[in-house]
Length: 75
Image 1 (cartoon, rainbow, N blue to C red):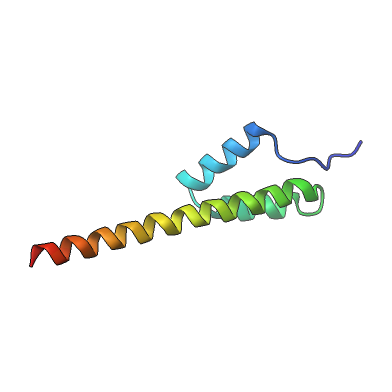
Image 2: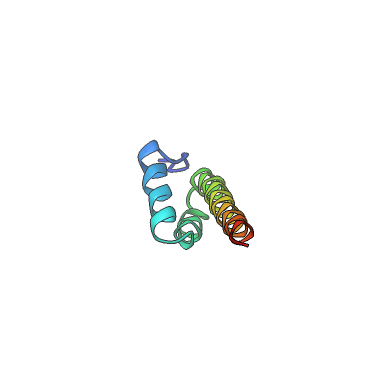
């Protein structure tokens, strides 16, 4: 039986929530878990991790920009 398949929607959702609520390190662990047994799932994890990392960077950048604007308007 070939176990190489992409992530299901349920697996994607669970992994996304784990990455957002816990740590993106969950994606790294999942990648190494599936790296040898299922390349499609490992690839899906990489794509999901890129998305999560991008969202985190955008949130941090927006928070920094809002903080800067707040400081500028105080003076």
